[in-house]
Image 1: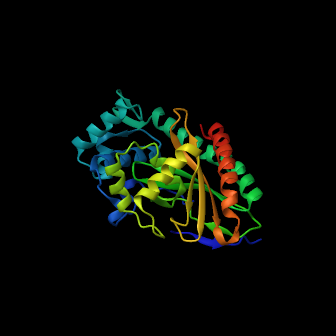
Image 2: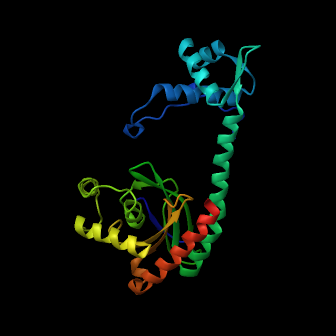
Image 3: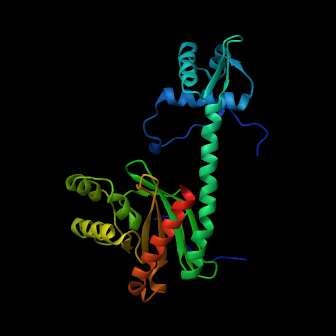
Length: 278
């Protein structure tokens, strides 16, 4: 767990095109789909250039096969993210690309609007409140975090990723994944827990989370850390995020008595966040 117990204390001139950017390395990169890389390179180049370009010039700059570049451009035009001028036979960034960027900015703004609500609970309870988002089928990522400024708290870096089964949040996400017991058992076997946890115990905790509407991880994710999480649902009523209260167990001797109250508070916060995030 990349977390730290802490205590609060009082642009370049020109963005390089994809071909000029350093490539990431390491096993975490996974399978690279070259046509996707080339398509993103074309979009980035056109967005940075800010002026119409011919296909041959784009291909030469990005060192893409001219025929491949033409097919990529034609596909991007059909998807409305690139515009084609038939008179000059040039390509430029399209309105669809601007709309995609606008949606991403809006999402970031919505996350900013969620912070005051999270901060309110963090200060009231003397805890750290985190917001997790599911990424694909096997990971969750930390997207926001707020802590009480007057209490010792647990610091977790934004962008931290965990297996989807992990923590209190994992017990909520798993409840809607519709995995067979065999598949869930196989995924569970790959997780390293901080203290002993059988599959049967974990499954019972998932079922309890479904009944209560909030989940608990009592030191299994990280020894000595208690986490409680509640769902944040999208307009289709799927769990898109979870909001979690994280605390150092030794600093909360009556933690068990607080779990239900915190769980209900997080459920209420999750509902409030739904109106902000969706």
